[in-house]
Image (cartoon, one colour):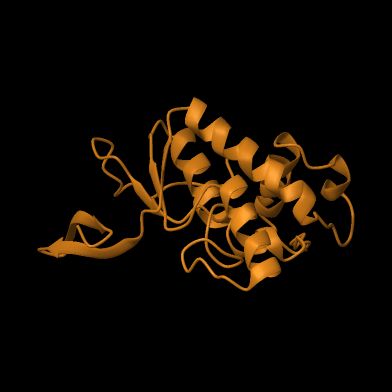
Length: 167
């Protein structure tokens, strides 16, 4: 049973652009790819392994990379906030279970599928996020890091362009 259904207004001849490689962006990429699209994920920060070094540098020296830190970069803000997961026990559509299953496919322990308060630590999330990126890339998705969506061009109430890094 499909848990996520894309709106019919999506033009199959266009390449979707997803703003951000946090959880919503990663799962959006999966949903689009399941429908045959090959999205581009524009992320203002760095890959999670580079971001980890930037966060560590900040904790040790106080030097902040404004685009790659605890808040910004692949994996989103939750990557360094100790991974508390919401089980969505009242989710009648089962979408939360689909998300948790995707985490398990990417290396999370299967216990998160049935625990009342599942948890993934940063030590696990870094590898899980990397695995998810590689899987999306293998399926034809593309990631562009250090790419901030800064504007959208709209003409006649239709999106005509995505402006990245003010270009």
